[in-house]
Length: 399
Image 1 (spheres, helix red, strand yellow):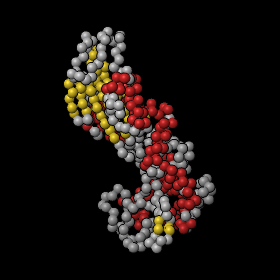
Image 2 (cartoon, one colour):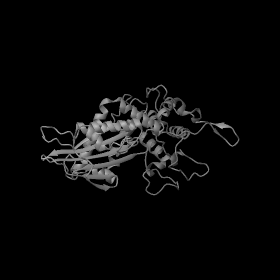
Image 3 (cartoon, rainbow, N blue to C red):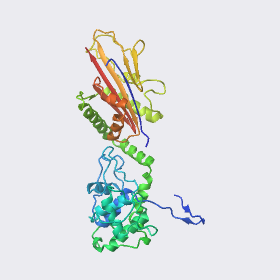
């Protein structure tokens, strides 16, 4: 997923079948995804999941209502895997490696860890080393060509996963579910020969479900559809983003920024305009800058109760412009007895699907970070449309 960010400031002062060499068609190899692995292991271990479980927006790449959500949430709860702490992504469609599958297998069935092994390709101190011995003891990923090599980062195919579960349950009958223990029709209560396709009965519906959103592009599209379908989610996201910004400002003892309707109006219009017309810039195709857009949104309109001057903000002409890369600071002096002081700025981002992700990108960019931490800013408006993010900053005071 590509991500784009941009900032500016102005102020005073401030599958097709695979053919073998002989031409004979054979079924393509398919690999187990994290959600699939969680489902098949939990079903075989008799772990019950809440089919009505929802993410409540905690995991941006998980879509409520999809088959895998209950298994992913339960997997996170029991420690089979963890979501990314910075982005919140749980990666339900990520392929599972041999090392990851062995860890999930061990934790699901509460098996012994640190079993001795003689593999020669496991790095010293590897975080997954405690689970590798399981494969050695039961020959779960056994290679007849070189049995001393596991290849822990190799992706696990559906066939390999089926064979591994079959081998383990055959060797340890006590791990098998008793008939009727798990109330799911398609679950098997005794090991089957993997040649009969363990996954055929258990995951065929799930596979058909996830393939529709398995690619990064379609996952993102599903997330955006969800965002558009939840009217209150955008408002909550705005609040979460402002909270995250003020949390960063508090670290430097800066005053928190408060939401401003007119800044939000200009930001929202620009986010929607960029998404619909397919551009990404502080300038519209007609050449209007963020200053023009903020002004047209009404932010610079002077309340007569605050100032009796017929003040018009001159944002160009004889003003002095200080260039700072993608940032620029415009300074000038307004001729008014009320001495209006204003500051304006804008941050843009595209491609992020969560507050954590966009804040990380902005704070890792010196220009965007500078805008977020400018002491002269006191107000903010957030624009959100699909994966377009707009921050309009401002201050307008009369001395």
